[in-house]
Image (cartoon, rainbow, N blue to C red; front, side, top):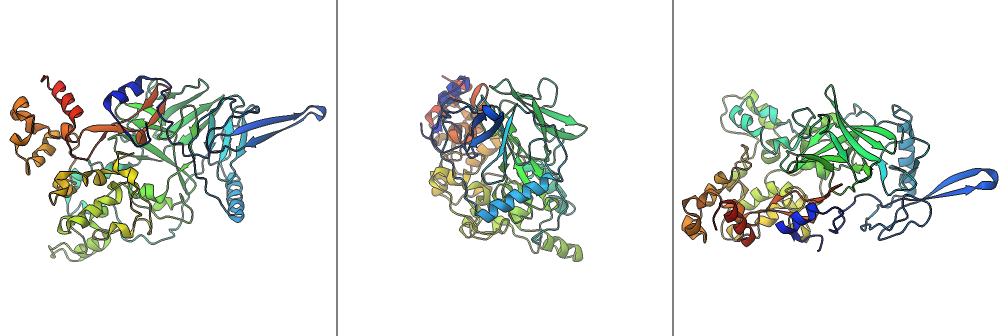
Length: 513
């Protein structure tokens, strides 16, 4: 099975029930495994640890180390830093460690070392594969986000709340949509996972590694227990509207990272974040500008890849990501309330079809990298002037909803019409799961009798076109590792087509033979 092959329902069920499934290992976004050799000079009673960094491919750790078992590793490209940059990183970490709060001291039985770029630390136990990977010194705490002056001037983004005084009806419905909820501050209501005793733990295959989610008077924490050592990571904000799940981010000074534990909606459980291996505790995945572009309205990017001005962050995808920065519009109409024509704002439905698709394509046209400044795209711009084109893998289902426009473009419905995203989606209201509502929009172009199942199903056929023609599927690109095996949250495929398996399942669920 290749990395990009879509998994059929029968395969999903089999994979979910299999512990230690032979499905391809999920992509691990870390340098590789660490081998540790303990060389003891008995004559003088002096010992030192020598750690061999993890390589690419399949390797066997032959000396006393984390494991003497072979372990499959994916090819990982490790950026090569100039010597000066490595020294600067090392100096930065040393300087920050001097102002950090003391955490729980690391036991002497655990091994530790910085990675070769000087950005992270590894902690491990001599006879196991499991490891901790953190961007702060073991025994210290993550640094609190500092108050910093922005590097760049905010181009006029205000956030959705700036629209509510004049557009109250739209605002009141929009704040319940997935766009608005794409990032939020952590509260007992915004975090989907449970903090109740018995439901707030994530166990792993390794009995010496587990996680506990805590709510301490409104401060939300992931506590890691690793071979007798405990350390805590704050949840500083929530990513995701819970369509599939939620991820959680934390600040280490002005740097932003993802936590190891996420929440998956379908099973309502705490689970390893995508790409993380069960039994590890990895808190060093950097969150870059391209990530935040699809989960926030604006943030000021600083001089390094995942460093930002914390106070500049505007959470949620607001009205402005589709209509343009709101400050000129708000300023004008505040000074000129008599002017009833909208000024200094773009209405996407007034744009050409391609321009409308490009607005949505910022986040829904496949994984792509920036070639312009973050948050510089404006409605009416060409997508290719701001982002590298998505690669061919994006035509298949992938993590999040990032490939919806790409999949839709393969559909005859799309190719034989002038449809755009807004023809099916009311972006100002929450319509998730309302299959009849979406099916009604299919009926604008199609007749009930055109469906091959119309006679068998009857008049209710038009209540649900979606499950047969846009079924939920899963792929290896959205694979979550757990102690019970691999989990594949289902994604709604936007390639509109005839799917025989989906049709048979629909008929079965409807009680129709």
